[in-house]
Length: 456
Image 1 (cartoon, rainbow, N blue to C red):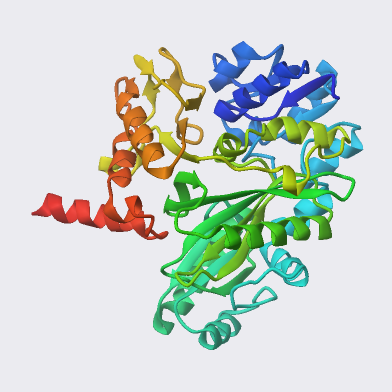
Image 2: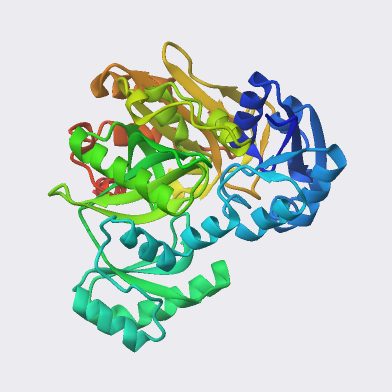
């Protein structure tokens, strides 16, 4: 096992990684920007290194600064968390060249699966079903339009180098396709430095379901069930749950076994998430792989009892998986709500500020992953995620009731500070959501209804 792990991230995920490292007797190094000098992980880690100013490009996205911090502190491994450099194959390669273990898949695997077109190609070979669309990146609006015509509208344009819900655009009719293509390629170039896009059939009434996979460097891979993450706004997830409601265990097991086999086929190692769209008829289609720990990983931890960060560390240290597929047992229902420092009344605009009051919920089977505390200044420079409230119960009905109670109990206050907790409770009380009949369109529908009620 490693002697010392540098955590190349911030916020709740950095603190979460530090806690598992401490339980395993592994030393920790927190890196931080000037904006995060008083953050919870800086207080919790064994060592700390300031790596730059608030701007992420000069701190958390600065590979030279992070590598230098690892050298100075003698860290033998780097955990990238999620976001920032977690899916950067160049950073993973730099770590390898420096003799530092990158806690994640090999650089070549990250590069292949990070390219959405290459990922579609590899997953097709591995036997995963994919949505109809272009296999290769499209070279012109005319070529893309011809593919869209063949697939049939609606279609979705996706950046080949995209991720995190960015670089996508739904097109419902041919007349608006050319303009959408230009906008998507322009956005892809600006966001990812890569203007390549592809066209895919769009499922308007789909559910978004993902499979958690663990794979070691010895050819072993298992899946840990599925999470439903259909409650999302602009492709950003707000609520997640496991197991997915109204989705048969046989379908989940089939998806899971295909994902685990695909992970083995491409040489994947560590924790990864295979994402699928599921049609109302129960058909499922591969969409992408996230080569990192997910924000919503606690949902899986709650129903399996498996510490995913611990498994990441063990696998990266060269150990074999300690469990076989038949050892994985799922119990009860877990739900996660992402509480962001945003104002739903102003189109979810970021609402940073100093927290004068911060009292997370408690009670039986309630877990709160957060870096917030009374007196903490929520910065405007980074993602607005403030806390993840995760609950477990023997069944979905009890889990939803527990989540509703927990969100109602959560006390956050401060000048200019707003959170999404109230809106999340609104989702919990939605009839379609409670019945498990919701799709990825649920949030936009609730917002439309709210606007209509306000206008009336």
